[in-house]
Image (cartoon, rainbow, N blue to C red):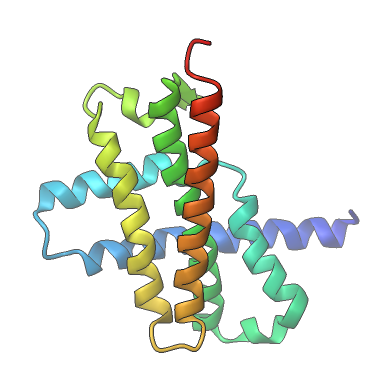
Length: 179
């Protein structure tokens, strides 16, 4: 790609990364009625398990909207909601990775120790994977409830989760660990 396209990609990555911190703060505020220790755990877990990859899935949402209708992103809140939707995809990926690492007895993920392998985590990571999934629906509710897309977004995330877990089951049944 030319320099202009590379600069645009770098801008997209920065905008997308910046949205993560705001999104995490929004979700944490939405859950503020939970005990502080739980909230501290959730923040640490999300920060450890969600960012760190290439974010190609989430970035494709932002870049896709830019390709289809860049003017739609002139509004800062709409731009943020598009990034939030992209991050929902990244959180879903994070959930699958946490669960997959446990099922496959993996040691590292993205160049670091798997979340469940951290001394203070262990099998709490099973609940953490479920929490990542649940937080996706909190985000969708925060930013898309009342929009014409809300129901369709819920259905898409449920369908992707179903298809991915069915695929993981086939993987686990046809190639058991150690064989």
